[in-house]
Image (cartoon, rainbow, N blue to C red; front, side, top):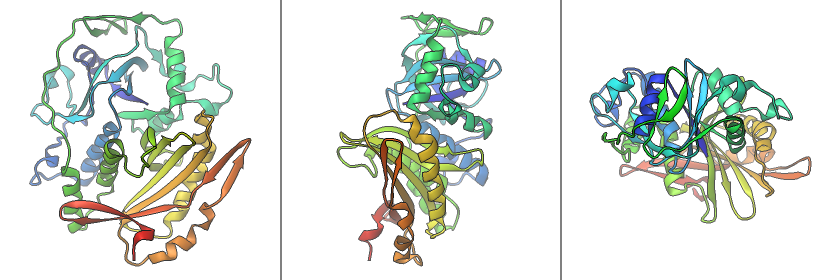
Length: 377
């Protein structure tokens, strides 16, 4: 899959010379992840953990694209060479050269590097060679409308559109010595490779411990749950069968101009079918009203997302509802989801919508454990 990092001309130059990509937020710090005594405002904390979620999607081998602000052009194409790591040094490595704090980072390497970039109009707005506006790169368009653009996952069809437009009449650069960015000509050019020698910390048990602390104090922590589950899906195949392959994963997937977003959306594949998995997360006890929200997401997936999946295999939509081990919902929640257990036929493709798979979680011995609803008493 592919991801787009938003950078400035200055930071892009450093990214190319040291072969890494990163994201951050002004002068904010991530010390709170490693030191519980550090106080941080809720909205800042949620924003920073959201950035961690964005970058945690990236797997080694994924395609990396850069959008350079100020000149409003997309450049590429590079490849992720490491999972996300955190530079929590004070100041972070290359902070002076970058001109800003970028604490969530990945290492990259060249894939197919083109000299010129393409304009925002050429990629996001142009209808050239498209059959309809539905084929436009809506993942980026919606993220731009929400002003939430640090690191965005794009779909396979959106990446293919980008590659087609970037490579047209462009020059591929091959350089064994590295790359840099010519600020005057706004071009990627051969440069001198500088070895990345900064430090990096992994996030492991901190996310669970943070959730436990907030749960004990009745504080919100859904953003931590999202970040944790993304890592579980990437690293431990959470909710996947042994024969399933993770093809694509997105978080806060915008589904319409109403600014609603799906917490986690994944595409998985078996030999026989494509699964589109909708994960709705709640760090509270579950409520039946959530079902209507899931219904809206299913409609959007049917009408806007599935048409971008150009596969021959049958497609199955699998909605998941994940929340705290409930107290007052009991099995009535199962009797209110008949609407979702239906088959829909669109054109020549049969699309099966599965019943909602309900999982609840509980904290035990500094761990988080998940259970299916039908396995509970």
